[in-house]
Length: 465
Image (cartoon, rainbow, N blue to C red):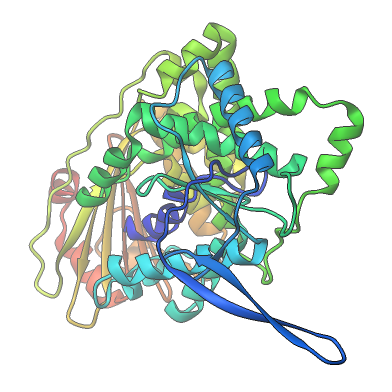
């Protein structure tokens, strides 16, 4: 079940800045691959061949060379970031410079390269099927892959890669100095590079990826963006009104070439909006030292949505869910549910306010996915609220989510022997709130889920999953 969000989260894992703020720093040559092109100029009598060396990255995308003046600008921006954060780089940050189109090509190529490495046979199809079953999209696996690649191409103004620790930013070709927009983006990404050196984000991410568990990602990412946005805002505040107008005019067009689903942007809403609000409160309480200290913490997504829970350090509750022995389905994977998952699932149907309100009441949650020999999924979820009132609010949000969708038909209990609420449709959904936990189950096979629920007595359903 988590795969529906994991593959979208991974997009941001190594491209840490979106189009509102952005990218990069430095100017170290990080590739040894070169290509040569031949440029011909002619006169009436002579053809002169001038060979220009073109440096490319690991995907064959052209890298631009930084001029001496641009290198001086990088040094100045590095000094600014160190002064504003009160931290120092342990080594000079590496960066690659691209044209805008080259930067987009890199984003697409790097995502596709990771895609081939990260997804086993049938895993991508199951991830998209999960989104289909949750009602997020009707897209096929092929179409969803196209949309994700396009989102990767156009959704960032620059990036810091958590693994190779390289900043990447698009700049205009044939300029001797970075313009104001490019500098503002570099400031933002330099902060991420500094964070990566102080916290060792590469090791943190590698561990999450190895364990296939990204629960700690949204909270820390939100703090990282809050600090980077704040330092970037300090840099912009030094500009006069004329230069600010000029910076705005220098901003490239980052629009996507296709219409992308709204839910693609829900994680960004957490990182840049809610995270920014929390970051301002942390900064107000303890200035930059407090934000530096916050980088070491691993807040929950709920604590980002509700700053009072961050400051009270409300713990996440580990909810135990049992793996079921099923005739037709075998265990696939399991994991924990966080507040971002709830918003991600519900927002496009019930709205941002109600989805976030429900997510803020989460105590904890777990899920288990099962698969049969037809590559169909049976998904179970178990959720605990902070208290009974919060649990009822979460349950009501999921009920509204189901009732608002025409793809579901709610069945009356006199048509079968089950507890809770059962919905029939292309995806069949069961929702049950026993006062202690909210349980959900989804299946494409109505006969399977109805028979399963008929065999599931109240006692078994209340204790086993």
